[in-house]
Image (cartoon, rainbow over all chains, first blue to last red; front, side):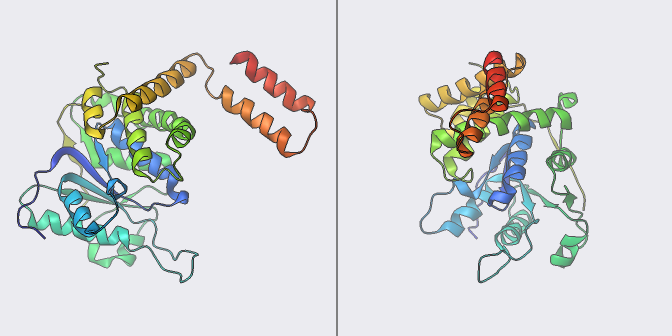
Amino acid sequence: MPAQAPEPSRDTVFLNIPYDDKFRRLYLAYVSGLVHLGLDPRATLEIPGGQNRLDKILDLIRSCRYSIHDLSRVQLDRTPPRTPRFNMPFELGLAVASAKIDTHPHDWFVFETVHRRASKSLSDLSGTDPNIHHGTIGGVMRELCNAFVRQARHERYSVPEMMKTYRAVSLLVEDIERATRARSLFEARAFRLLCSAARRFSGVPQTR
Amino acid sequence: MAHSVIITTPMPTWDETVERYGLSEAEQKFVIRLVDRKASRRSEGRAGTDRRIRSASLKSAQTGARKVGPTARKKINRARASA
């Protein structure tokens, strides 16, 4: 780990979630919810391929003020050889180490679908209460609100308002997929367009 | 260690968004056109009519119908009338 950490950008959130089609609705919920709260989601899918991917992931985590780690995918996948997904807990470990070692503040949050499962699958997290969203869109929005509280204009940041942004963004998915010719939404350009569309929808101050 | 953080920084503007994501002129136009069109259709209660037309037409095509059935035709006409 390089000694000098990059200065974290304010309001940036490293989003550590599984990239699979079954998680697509929750992925949209995370992106819409975070953008609605005025936060800036970042994800490893923005990182171009090639060498030193691990270094780039670490740099991305350290450049973020917050991180969200969804540990919902702990089961074995169907593709042989059947394995669980280790990326999410691995990147959680990187974030925890970064928060401990770096001088810049970094807050990390663990999100889960099932109560008490994280304490079984990752007992090192004992003493940490995960945010349980029960695998629902509303649950993700609720837990994002629990994790992040905006001081100014807090009346605007209700779950129903966030759901409006989610629904609006999910209506754009087809157009974005068509425009980007993306095979899935888990691609850099689709992610970028989703975030910017969500920001425009959520009614952030606009100058044009 | 359940905790929340309080965000105190102001909401980013659209210009900041454009800068952050490095949106090209074409991408900016695409997003603005897409979002504003959907928003205006939503405010007029016409959101989703394109999808309903496509859905009804597709269903007829999938079932191999040589001509669109009366129910699908009704749905298409209703959607087109409100589009």
